[in-house]
Amino acid sequence: MSDYHKYFLQMKDDTVKQINPFTGTEVWTVPGRASKPISNAVPETAKKIEKKKKEDYCNFCEVNYFNTPPEKERLVIIGNKYISIEKLAASKLNLTTAQFRRIPNLFEIVTLDYWKKNYGYTLDKECLKHKTEYLTEKKGYEHIIHMIDMKLKLSGKNPSEISEKEKLEMADAFFGGGHELIVGKRHYIKDAEYDTQLCSSGELTSDEHFQYLKFTIKGMVDIYKRNRFARYISIFQNWLRQGGASFDHLHKQLVAIDEWSVSIEREIELVRRNPNIYNDLAVNLAIHFNLIVAENDYAIVFADIGHRFPTIAIHSKSKKVFPYELDDKELRGFSDIVHSIHAALTSQIATNEEWYYTPKDSMDVMPWHILIKLRVNMPAGFEGGTKIYINPMNPFDLRDKVIDRLYKLRNEKKIAKINIGEECKTKPNCLKYYLKYYKI
Ligand SMILES: [Zn+2]
Image 1: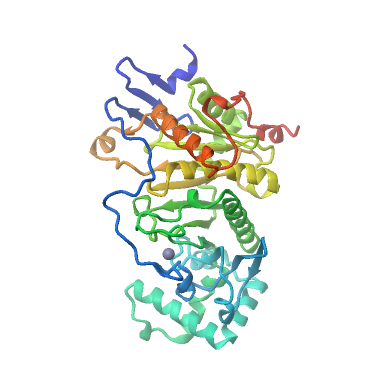
Image 2 (image 1 turned 180 degrees about the vertical axis):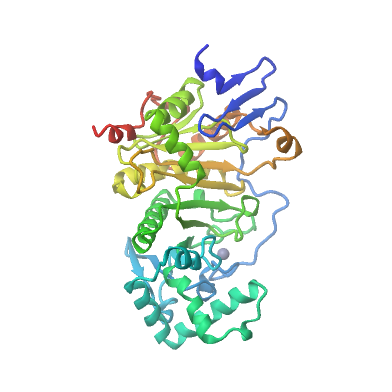
């Protein structure tokens, strides 16, 4: 028996015991919990929505540009090109329609105060200039006060008890904070009739999805540039309320932190001991147990083991380890795979998309990888007491369900051409990040 079996053991009754090689999390899938295939059909419980010329279903919708803090950047389509517009003045917010916007999060997880008080962080010249110029316009000034008042009210405070001077100081977070959102254009898909027809990552075209990833990475680079104390930028996407999202409107979050995070530190520790671990104990192990879902020249996907929630793992094959180093062709290839998985999972399954990549100050490197977790179950008492997690879907079920959907979507030309299931070349050691490790 290969030593892989200490991580993955199929028992006679079809119970699958798994230990995640990177986290040590023990997970069991038990037989008899098979669920239906994944479908994007409108469920009977769906409610009709009121059609709007311009969407106004939430604060991230097009009509409500003034209900989010001042924008840092937007992507618009001119002709057939995506053009970036940075730091739009309030008076110009409604002159164009943003395909994607980068805006500060009204409620930061790591606040500007944290950086100011703990590190002596100050807004750089460009951020200060943006703030001054934004406030010069009457419309801009009103927008800022409106947003600060909204923030105060939502935190249970009375805006009239706070001076204007203090409010303007609080607005620093809008111009130099380190928690940003990338917001998509649409709330519902075009011609949607029901409230379940939300515009998820998978409902974008593969080209739109590539622009979404590229724009997110551009935001990441900008946050790093503004805050030299940021050692890592956590990037994630919560989809639907069960996935922790406060709005059912597509968005990613970028949060600057002053450490690598517990999970990255643990992974770096492992990669120090075995530089090839992402081949050995991720991709090669997945090949060994026949868990590969899809592949192209730039990324490989498998049903992952040892997670509390059913999880799909996507690894970049590139020699380049920082997401911002990938050229357009590589990023497009990687994005095509991520997009396909989201499309396969449909807009109706709550998910978390989590990014993992090499911190900028690490000499040890890992491949850029993304986990997409399906929030379909709720760990409960058994899990709390035993630290053995019952995951409702065994990795083979997850693999098969996603593969079925991918074939269908590829036939319908809704995703890019990728190899699916048995078409995958499944070469061991296909991740090339370690070449950088050995400086080859
Ligand atoms: Zn919306």
